Length: 274
Image: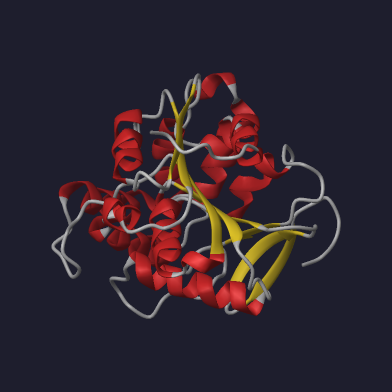
């Protein structure tokens, strides 16, 4: 990784990423379905100086090579994450942060590579729809693809992105960034991610964890609401279960709307909840 306080673009293992050099265990950040690596830039500004950060553009996003399967699983994305960390020389345990869809990938990786994850932080977790791989897609997943095909990325983002924020009119710069990120999606990569979401089963991977984990969610999140976060939290094994944090005045785009609150949790030690 390149030095400096700013996030630096890079490419490794067929994936693009933003990174910041530092010392100690890296924070590896996995974005949501309508976003990209840059969504973590506001968070990085609130992390302790010198915290190394790796934020990927998932396969099919931001110039990253897509996956081969038309209907990939969270495990397929997790395998590409392992390739990326290998290419970056990240052999030691990392702090793994997933946001929304990224939580499915993070949990799949942590379950399969427990020695590579010191701590798992699930922000605004998407639970997955639990559909069988290969289909059919449920109504919610199919509506995403139909809307994108009908509207195109720009109008799709204009219609959908404001719902990711609580009172978007009060944070116009953040709303513009969230909308721009969604407008930049590649329809083919997005379609793969929608299928992964459709067949995702976050609770299954969480139940098999051997890694300390916690959940954080915006109290006003209408995309993955607090009740969904509570279900994810309850799925964690007792020995791994850290706190569940609700962030007031925040919607779904937690790393952008409440980066300070998320940074505080990342800086805190997990105290297992019993």
